[in-house]
Image 1 (cartoon, rainbow, N blue to C red):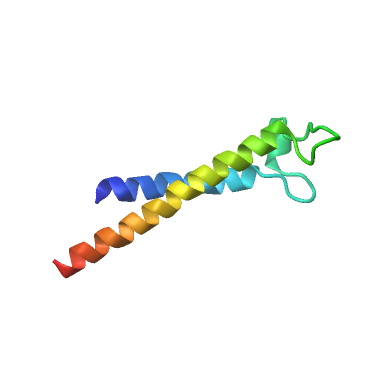
Image 2: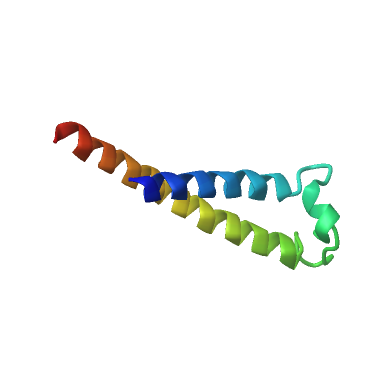
Length: 79
């Protein structure tokens, strides 16, 4: 139970930080870390694409943690 809660807290904090690092319409925190340098041929830089991938992976882990927490709570409540 505590492992699932700890995982949810960590993934939630990571998701908040990763979303804040994304570049919005006028730039964002990602431009401070080199995300502002992009190729003219592609829509975004390699750093931005990697940030997108990492955000999706952390989001999937967060969703799996939410589902596991719900199942765990349901089994505890019915026991």
